Structures are given as structure tokens and as C-alpha cells.
Amino acid sequence: MSLNWTLEIFILLLSIILMIIAIIIAYIQYSKTKHRTFLYLSLTWIFISLFAFFEALSYLFLSIELFRFHFYFIIISGFFLIMSVDSFSRYFLDPIKTTICGILSTLYIVVSYIPDTIVPYTFSNGDKSLSSDGPLVIITTIFFAYMEVLWVYQSTRLFFTSSSKLKKYSSINLIGAVFFGIIPIITMATRLTLIIPGCGYIAVSLGAIISTTAFALQPKLRDVLLEISRDIRIQMRKQLEDQISEKEEQYQSLYTQMSEGVSVNKILHNDMGEIVDFIIKGVNPAYEKLFSTPKMDAIGLKGSEAYEENYQIFLEYFNKAISEGKPQVLEVSFQKIKKIFFISLFILPKVDRFANIFMDVTSEKKREEERIKSDKIKSIGDLAGGLAHGFNNLLTSMIGNIQLAKLSNSSNSQNEEISEFLDDAQEAAFQGRDLANYFLTFAEGGAPIKKTINIEKILHDGARISLIGSDVKSDFNISKDLWLVDCDSGQIQQAINNLIINAKEAMRDSGNIEISATNEHLNDDSVPLQPGKYIKITIKDYGVGIPPENIKRIFDPFFSTKQREDQKGMGLGLTITHSIIKRHKGHLNVRSKVDVGTTFEVYLPASENQSIN
Image 1 (cartoon, rainbow, N blue to C red):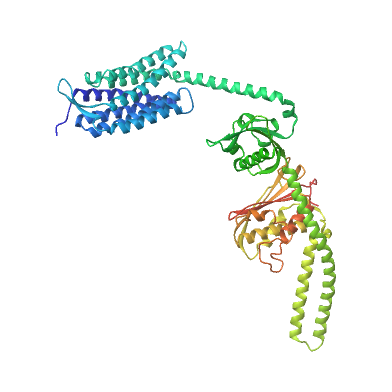
Image 2 (cartoon, one colour):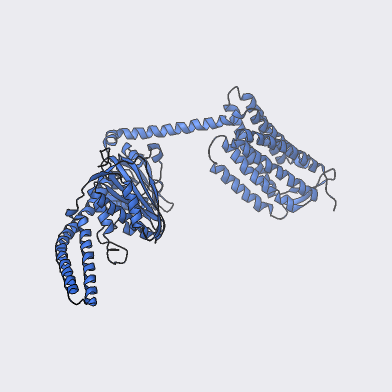
């Protein structure tokens, strides 16, 4: 098959060579400056080059399919040209430009497959070629015109807004825009390309080189429109701030004096008129503090962004306030910021506006939970103390009589069977006495007898004793300068043992338990304790974890998920531990996740003494 080497193919190849020069210039500048404008220009020129290359191939082989295919490259180059233009004056793609590009691209693809839109053509000198006809000519002209008008418009704006120092370079760029954007349109509209083959491509490639060279000689040229756009945005933002300031002046005294956070919101509807979300229109200083969110960041946020999963609650109570015609009060827990709010929601006179007043009750709720927990423990402690004292008296009598019976049995002809029964009875009585003493630990009789000690030995002893006979190991991280504490070493030892045993059982007798002790200065509401110096003991396991529905009940007396056998699984271990820590004016906290593990944190007040008692 003979190839169709025509003058038009040589002109296209020359245009491609010129375009490659423009690509190299743009990419070198991108490598130096890392400015995306040069990257987008490189990609634009690359795809225009591919457009010309495949058009040359289609002429060379007189292939209608190649001619149809080469249009796809001009579509992509159009998109990158939009990105180039937009990179001068904004931080995002203009949706209007991209929408028009998408519509024209779709038309291009559809029209190119219409029969007879691509036809053979013979020049007056006898050279053979291919030509677009009918609607394909129209859509091609429109697409090129759209691309080139964008570039000419941008270059014209740049010329008129650049300073005198940059005027020379913006003039060069404008000349390049004329070659790139005006001459090709004229050649296509007048069908001059059928008389002088490839003349439009030469103009485009020259325009690309000239414009790219202008930016390469003076890179600051790319920032001119960007600075203007930034000034406009700053001005618009200032106008918004002024409007907000005017509205705030009306309620300034209320906003600044209230300790509760206030937000003013606007309801958002979908196309069906249904309420789907709301947007924050204003907040007061207390709100900024409560949510740790600056005013300018909060304003404009949607409820779904600001409050995540809780935003639906506001919509529900907004509808309720509308239907009942009165303000609503709700309690909402925000897990992300670990706060609980009482929120008053009331409708504002303006349509679809409502306000929230946030009262932080996190500390009060924590204290209330601790009070309820302490009341439960005190109630069971009072009952257990009374029963334990009476039970101990009975057991003392029983143990004495059993011992007398054993002596009597041994003094006579010894009956081994009776002796075994008496031994079992005595062992059960001793276990009953131990259980009674267990109750007394958190009864009134279990008040701590404090001495000043270093807690480190108790931690090591607790791990050694509690982990005997298991494959669970302990990893320690104890601060070298750990403060001393005033405590009842026996009770604290029991509390630590309970926590380590609990961790060991969660690990199913294998794995590592992390035990650490550090110095902590408390000065906020993160822990329900008075500000001051504390020892923080952390016992962390990687066991089965505690389900969320059980996490608030683990300190309740007799609550257990284990089988009840002897004292194991009676549900008193963590209750007694909580009672011991509470009586030492400390705090016990727990964090857990199922199949990940559990962390217990013990806070004990640091001693004012400097030496061990």
C-alpha cells in the first residue's frame, strides 16, 4: 500500500516539532517552580500534539477511523486548557467551563460517528486528504473557538491588569494568544485550511511557543490574576464579616456575657422541599470555646459536618418545635469531643431559622454517675457489713466447735471418715470467713489506714502474685521520679490484684499486660477530681474487651459476665476496687473495645511527704 505523503502531513509534523518545543519550555519551568500552571500547559500542548500527530497519520493512511479517533485528544487538551486558565485566578475548576467542555465533548463523540461527516478530499495540486463535513465542521469550529476564546480572554485580562514592569511580557503572551486563539478560528471559519493545508496548526504551535516563552521569561506573570482574585475573595470575606458584625452588635451583651454556647442556624431543603440538613450562620464566643472551633470556621458548616451523627436529632426537635409551637430541651452526648450538653432549641422569627443554646453538663453528669455508683456501693456495703459481722460471729463459733470435734475424734478411736468430713467443714468455714472479710473491705469497717509509700513495689508484687500459674506476662513502665502516695498498702494491693486478675482472665491466660505509673498534674474536667498532683496507674490488656452496653455496669455490685464459682464471677472484684480507690480520694476509669482490649486508669493523690513512712 502506497503512503499518502502530502504537503499537509509535512506541515503537521513541523507543527508537532514546534509544539514539542513549547512542551519542553513549560515542563522545565514546572520543574523549577512546581507551579501547576506550567504543568497544565505542558499537558495541554502534549494532547494538542497528539491531536495533530494522529491527524497526520489519518492523512498518511487515508484512514477514516484514525481521523475519527484523533478528535478525542482535542477533547482532553480542552480540559487541561481549562485547568490552565483557572489556575491563574482560582483554587478550583470553574463548573461552568467544565460543563460546557463536557457537553461539547459529548457532541463531538456523537457527531463524529454520523455517516458522511468525514469525507475524502483532493487539493487543487492533486494531493489527497480527509475532511470533516456538515455538523462535524460546526462542532469542530465551536470546540476550537471555545478553547481559544478562553485563552485569548485570559491573556487579554492579564495584559490590562499587569503592572508596567510586566507589561512587556504580558504583551508577548497576548501576541501568542492571537496566534493560538484568533488565527486558527479565522482559518477554520473561512475554510482556508482547504486551500493552505495545515496553516491553522502552524498558528497554534507558534502561539503555544510564544505564550509559554512569555511565562518562562517572567514567572511572576502567572500571579497577576491570582492576586486580583485573592483580593476579591478577601473583600468578599470582609463584607461577610461586616454583615456578621452588624448582626452581632444587636445581641453583643447577650453573646459576650453568656457562659452557654449559642448558635444560629438555617434549615436546608432538597429539591422536593424536604428538610435534609442545616447550616450554621452565627456563633458566640462561648460556643467557640465549648467546641474548640473558631467562629470563621464554624460559620458556614453544615450540621452534618459540625455534629456528624447527632445532626438528625436537631432536625427532629426542630420539627417538634414547629409542630408544638414551643421551644424544646434535649440532652445530647458528643462522643468526638467527649462532652454532654443540655440544649435548648427555639424557633427564630425568620423562616427556617432556629437557635441552639448549649449548656455543658459533662462534669455534672460525671459527678452524678459517680454519686449513683457510690450510693449503690454504700448501700450494698452497709448491708454487707452488717451481715459480715454477724456471719463472722457464727463462723467463729462453728470453727471452734469443728476444732473441738476434731480433737474429740482424735482422742477416741479415730474415725478417718469423720475426720475427713470435719476437715471439709473446717475448710468451708475458713472460706466463709474469707468471704465475710471480702465484704468488710467495702463496708464501713474497711476505712483505709494510710502510710506514705512508693507504689512501685505494690505493682510488681500484684503482677507476680496475680499471674502465677498463667502464661500471661507483664510489661512495666514506671517513672523513675514517681511521686509517693498516702494509702493503705493492703487495700491498694487488693485493688491492683483485682485489676490484674481481671486483665489476665480477659487475655485467656496468654499474652502481655502493660502496667505503667506516671506523675500527672490535673487542672481540667477530664477526670472528676480536684486539680492537683496525682499518680496515674494504667493497666492495659489486649483481651476480649467489654461490650458498650456493659461498660457502665462493671462497677455495680454482683454484676458479672463470668460463671459463678467460689468468689470468681461474684461481681465484687471491680466493685471493691472502685470502693478502695474512692476511699483514697482517687478515681478509677475504664476504656474498652470489643476484641481489642481494655485499659483501666487509677488516679491516686500524690503525697505531700517527701519520704516513705
